[in-house]
Image 1 (cartoon, rainbow over the protein chains, first blue to last red):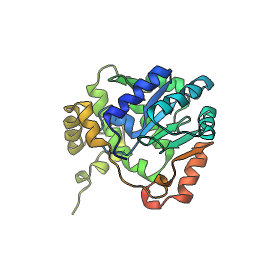
Image 2: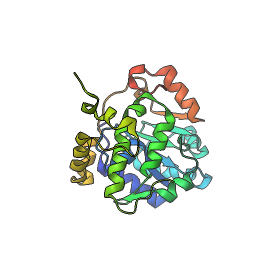
Image 3: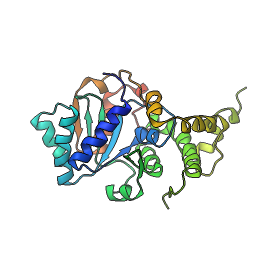
Length: 162
Length: 84
C-alpha cells in the first residue's frame, strides 16, 4: 500500500457526499488540507455519531474498497468512539468522539471547506491534539499553534473559537 | 552553544497563540501556501511501517480511553502514542 493521495481524498469526499455521510477531516491530515506543511501517514475523519450517519457510512466505505465483515460493519454502525481501518486502499481512522471536541455539531459550525473537503477549524484540531496528551501530539503543538497564527492572518473570515 | 531562539519549537514560547512565528517556520508556511493542494498532499503523506499498529486490518474501541490505554500497553514507546 502506498501513501495516501489527493485522488483518494477526492474519492472519500465524493463517496461520502453520495451517501450523505457527515464528517470532517481532523488531526494532522486536516491541518495539511488547511496548508500546514508537515508529514503524516493516514487520514483522520471525525464522523457524526448518529444512527442514520453511521448506517450511511458502511456502504460508503465499501464503495471506497474497504473489506468489512458483517461484524465490523455492525461495530461501525454502532458508532464506537474510534475505528481504525487498514483493510482498504488506504489507512483511515474514524473518530466518533475526539478528545477535546464536545459535539460534532459545534465542530461543524466552525468547519472550513477546502476544495470541497470539509475540515475542522484549526482551533478544533489543536484542541483535540492538546487533549490527547500524547508525546507525538505534544511535540507537534508549538508548530501547529504558530501555523494557526499564520493561517488566521492570511485567511480572511476564519473565526477562532471564543 | 544552541540558543533558545535557534530552536523554533522553544522560541515560540511553547506555542503560545500570541507568540511571534519563528522565521524558519514562517518561511515554510509561506512556501506551502504557494503550492497547490494536490502538490502539498504529495509531500505530506508518507508511508512507513508502524509495528503492531499496522499488523491488524481492523480495530474498534468503545471509548477513546480504551484506545489510549491499548496504545500504551501494546505499542513501542518510540512511536509516541503514549501519554505524557
